Image (cartoon, rainbow, N blue to C red; front, side):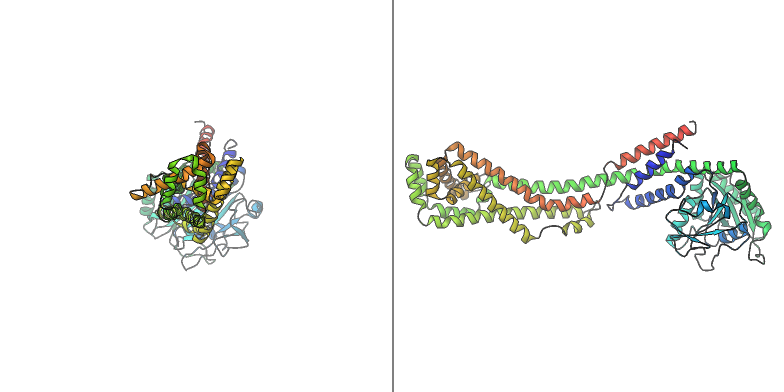
Length: 567
């Protein structure tokens, strides 16, 4: 399998990069299947592919109380495997090999996740007992596995893992339980993988052997396992040494020893089982693709929900800045109080030529004292709008994520990194003040000639800045009824004031620049609260290309196998 070898390593690396972090319908099964495929590669496929001459590993598997440990003891002619009367009978696995084969099993060549306990069985599901006996032939090891139908889930999972790591199965069942569904599920898997397997029908009562054997053989044939040797052990008392009588296991021992002593037969078994395991990997790997697509699509949806919510919030801020909505309420009232009853408007309309003196005289009274009120009202209005729309976007994302797509747990994680309402208000207020400071800079830049500078100085830079903000927010698209009349009329005052100082083109340029600056600052403000959600998605580690990568390596592996088989 030289051409297949590098592809198997590529597959192993690809599986390491797969993740199914979102709790979606297919995720749990995909996680389990991915773990099983990794085990299959680590426990059996990769080590066997690298060492076809290693001893065969025969896993003795079967149902609770089927007599697996007793069979291992009988085949080794010693009580190396201990079972219990308490269910589950076999709790931890035990691997038995010839002393001369120690080099193959003392390290982690196979089953690397299980720690080795030499001299007997381990005590936990993460341990593998190792025992040696010269009564086994060289080139063959037996592995007594936990029960496939154990009431303990860890036992069942470990049993399945060990069977997947076998070169051949010695499958033990009883006359009373050979028709159970769970054993046949595993036997169907053996047939699909083309694994070398022998069936041991144990504890057959006198007088029913022929009938039970015939029925079992028929079932095996129906499942494509007619080639599997079938051995029958009668129901009898154990020998004085506590072992199954030797005549009952002679046929099994002869079959195993025949495989062990014949290097060609050993290699043939290893190649057959390895080829079946590799073929099964390509088929099982394909089953992960829909789950990977489900994760990718959900991630895209979750990300778009964040982007859409905050883009919508930013669009509402931009619209409020552009359509005059900010001149509602308190801002409108403060501005109206600032400009007075409308006398200044009539003076403006009387002629721009006399405007400077009239404006200067008008703004010198208590109006200067009211400038700060207008500035603060604008500041508060913009800050409240930024905070409100941002928190609305946060709530929208949280509701969308909580509705499904596996994002429920992400909401709580993201919430821990969000700013508090108070922090948001403080930052928004500072943002508006900095923006107002930028307006002052624009006014200074445009008023560099002496005439404009004198007019700005005579009115005060804050007053000119307020007028510029009113012009920026002066569109009446967001106002109704009397608000249109008031805002529209008073905006003319601001416009005329600025035009008298800077000229029409400069006013438009300053308004456009200031407006764009506020749009940008609003976006930057909102990004801070969008990032925790985006960060949560990034930490998931979902690789959008994982499905394509897996599909590619599986296709290459399948093609290499077909070429290897001469197809």
